[in-house]
Image 1 (cartoon, helix red, strand yellow):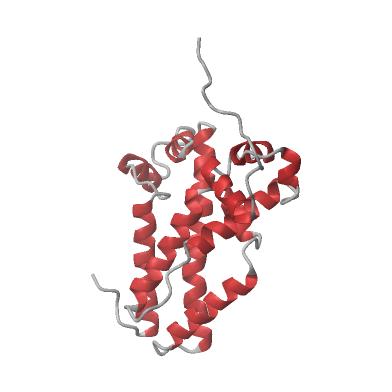
Image 2 (image 1 turned 180 degrees about the vertical axis):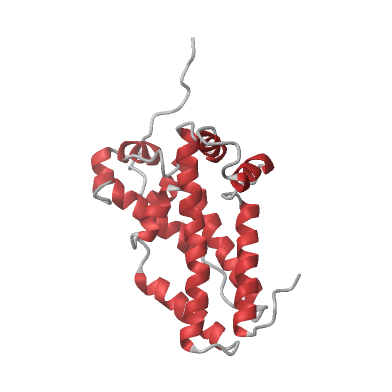
Length: 225
């Protein structure tokens, strides 16, 4: 027979603010965070939680803002331009991939546009200082940002495929099994190699390709080895 030794909560209910709610969502995990679970985690009633947030959408919005503001992206501090851009891309991938449910909120504008725009302004100024025109600075910045966010959405989609029993390799084999052995030799070779286009190693390789292309196209110093 088990005995619950936890003492009942006494006195005033815990003081709750938006930062505490966001922390609770991240501790529970965004994919498992319901209004009821968050309320229980915080030790408050469900109506008490509704006093602070309207619904689960609000929960994830708070968690997204918290994840990105409590661990802000790296700002340019005079290092090599490519090193900084790689660090930024890796930051975006790491933060969003840690909680897949945050991806939707990030791309739907859950993060305040003023904060995002300030960071963008500083970023393009840093790139302009490398000798790029305003249009070129924006093109470089957008390329890196798009690759970082895109890699997270692709990785999350692959996770969902895998959960349903159809990972990358299984999908390749399903296609090639229906075709002549002479068809799609490159795809068959990829399947045999075990290459994972959704992992961190593949992502870093794509960033290398992007940095090399940027340096070549704009005549910038190449990324240090």
